[in-house]
Image (tube, rainbow, N blue to C red; front, side):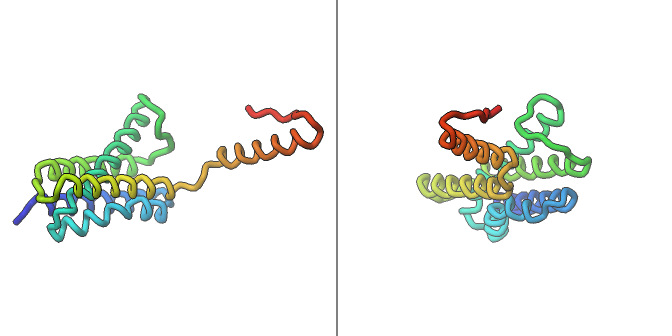
Length: 170
């Protein structure tokens, strides 16, 4: 039995399930389904022992490990890159996702595949983009962004209505 592909598949499964539980407890199931879509490829391909699973999984695991690290930096009060309120269940599940990511990365680094470097890097780049896009589209635009856009429109209208602007952006 070839262990690294299975480890990658089961690591992706653990991360997906943990993130679905986070979605349930935070009332963001749809958001977490979207966020985990790229992980389904390495999950299924790893369980089927396909070499492409390694290169699809590595960027996803790196991104999820980075996100879990940023959450912990926030929880420890060391950085505010990611902020929010995290329930005890969500905090515990950050550990599950982080450990699953580490396990998947270790298996990936140990697994030697026969894919050419060009194909491997292309697959990794595609999945890095897919994971980042999935994360981005899973969050609606922030209220501040919408307000900033309205402010620019109001400023634009004021400048041309009477020749000078009384609107200030703070």
